[in-house]
Image (cartoon, rainbow, N blue to C red):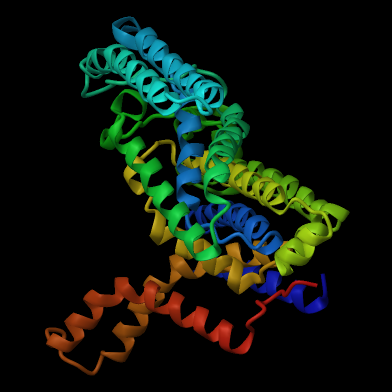
Length: 432
């Protein structure tokens, strides 16, 4: 990393310190935590686009699967729901898996024969009828169990930190299945396919209440750090806070956010180290060769589709880990908050501005763009208020501009992206 690159990171640090000084350290630490998760998301996209040239616009679908992992792993089970229909749902899902495997066997065995297609249709019809026979009554029974508070199966009540790698595995498994179908498409069609798949995944999570409570959300998820109330009721913590001259409530909030920050930094450092080692390895050079010229790499004997599948699965696994971390940080799972197009656009800006193909650039883009995304609105509101001071407080122009300050973040993101593409098209920290 060059001296200029270090200056970029120092400037990011100074911006966050400025938020702590002029706003509050609670806001600054919250911003740091979400910026660290944004940096991890940016690294995941950099793996797919910067290393392999895959145009994935379905990022939020894999992030949502990571959030689902937190619910499945760490939420306490709803015993009454399990008794009402949990085991029947598992039986139905087992039938669905057998149906998929059996259909592949039937198609492979009977396709050359005269009635191969008919045999496959008959088999799938019978499997579908059996699946719906088991699944539908079980789901209705589960969702009737105290729907205001539960209405879903819950999870396995395991430590929430275990959900982070499970989120990566769940997203990787989904990417494996999706990649076998979509990665044969050209880049623009791949983007459309991945966006559609992300919309489908989010729609499933919104409507399958037996699994995620749908739009009712799953709240009260466990956390890997202490609760503020517990710290406030602890005598030693109150004494420690008083010695530092900090209010106990504020000190507990800052302590919890600092604990989260340490965990997020550890995960970011681990993923970044692995990405750097991969980038500088023979495998990384091969992936960049495939990215730059697929046909030449194929002529040299490289299995381009298989390598694309590898890179797609690895990047999606990082998205899943980041999604699990985000849900853990929020303490709740909200399926409707995963808006595929809106937040995917933001992550793409992080990679483009930071520098595609450079892991340091991806991290810088995640930190810088998240800061701008959060701070542009209050800064824009203060600027508009200052510039319209000469106008009467009830002036229609002044009122309209102040009411439109919330849209400043979209304007500034687009403007910032255009400026970078015009004067620094390779990103702030370009690929070496």
